[in-house]
Image (cartoon, rainbow, N blue to C red; front, side, top):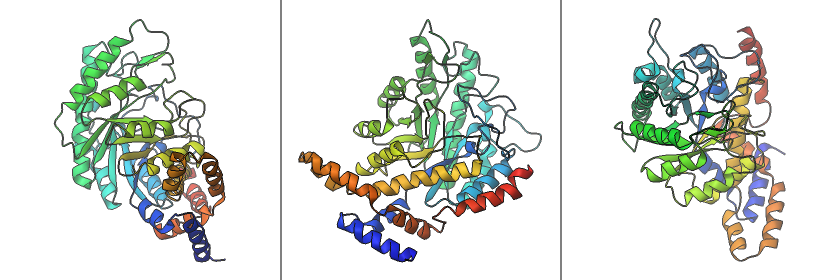
Length: 418
């Protein structure tokens, strides 16, 4: 059976369940997903030589890590060739590119320091998302940035955030795509603090000062991201889920950003997505795969990944949720990690689009739960692979695992020679 014949048979079977697979494919082609630059170099960046801090960690030492902006862009280009669908570029401020002999600290960053990234994105028809980098810097004092009781330290990081607002607007104007600017800090304490409220009040004031920088709300989408804990800050993090969610809810134009690795192990973001959509016009999402904690493993086509995609699709929120990948595995081929994670999220979205969501909702509302369970299980064996093949074909990328041959060749010819 040819690929076309496989798809036509699958299309007919899905149609019997009330699903238009052509429409599903067409819809997914228009949904941008942000690809994070920091998978390519283990979150090292280009503005410092020190260790990774802020309660995060990249483990492993697989050969071929990108060491320069040129190598990182080259690796990302190779990965993009194997990814179907619409992409955005996601940058951290620590990936500023300076001319030879030039350097400014993070509080003095300007749009010109990201001009090469803009050129890269525009050539590939990609928008850009952005993240101030509140870690891995010598001005992180006692592990604190925006919550620091030292006003000079706090001002430095506030000024960094303001600079990033200006850069985000530059990205949006240059690419014609709104820029999601995400504020996340690793501030916290290893052991039980004597004051939990004080750091959070300083954090609140710091974010408010950052957001006082003038910007076009149609171009820049500021977010605040929570975290339950990190390495070295196990007992207390200032930017808790309650803090960031309440801040976003009480500050117009500020979005909540949920990272599905940033909650307690028994919590699932798939349940939080519809809850937030009841109140926020837009939300943001960082997609990762936590293993016992926020370990940032490569995203797979697993149950929770599929459930998150289902909640976005079934609630007609594809235009309301800003989606970005966020993981960094230094123990495997980094280009493959990008490709596997991106394709897994694309599969999850396509699978959700190939689900008869309205029919399932109707069965739930009519309390026909036995029938609902049966149909949900029945659809798990529908020929989704044939629909994925057709989607990849229309996007001009390889559908099966033969894409990995190109990765292995690139590894031998480029990565292993670094």
